[in-house]
Image (cartoon, rainbow, N blue to C red; front, top):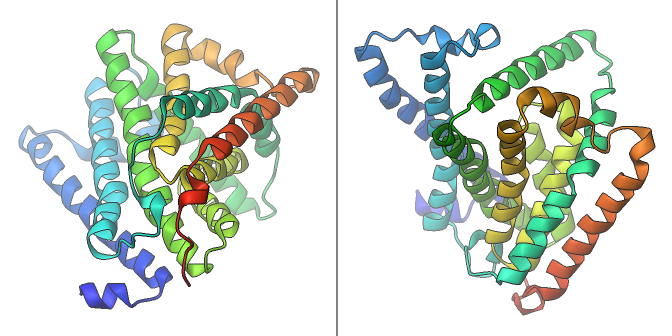
Length: 309
């Protein structure tokens, strides 16, 4: 099996790794369900997402547990299979070496400053209409369901709930999604495109956004994926994209907790999204580009061995 994987085309390798992830996720979900089933807990929560309310505490907790299991299986498992069977020394973005504190702070601030730009792109993206009505209706319904579940996940007033949400919504996705996309997907795309890292990064960013199945925010998420991809490639480490990913997600969790979900809807999400705030969007672009440039200048990019086709 190892030899077959090593000498397969990178796309075949990726598909096999994703199959490992899906199998691991199904296995972990099955194991996780056992104690819930023993307690006589109904699995209706899986299908009742849109109709759940904040009073359905047990159902929300169950969905949060499934979110953790999904990340462990679908996102993290393929990375470790890749490291064990397919790792090649000259693909540095699959590693987790130390990065300087200054680079981490600069990139974290750059991701924080991207908030108005992301809101601006999200507002523009949300106005796009898919030409096929049935697909457009499905997109709208899926988005409403996802937004509803996110609000239920964020709806906590305790410090313990905040810490758990930071782990579930910020830390775990930052680790799992970066291990899969920048740590596994991107190096394999780099092999596929014979070292053309720009193409590898943008193709990875496309699938990073696509696999979220939230198409009303597809383009801003793809842009974020590309920024994270360049940070991984230029620094030679997954630490920077993990930090940037964590900052982006943790910001929403903290705003929802300290300001409130209602305020998050009415104020925070409009920051930079209206035409009278274009100066704020331009400042956001400037700070983001400046932060990325400083990471590039301070990176070990020139020290990474040339990739062989």
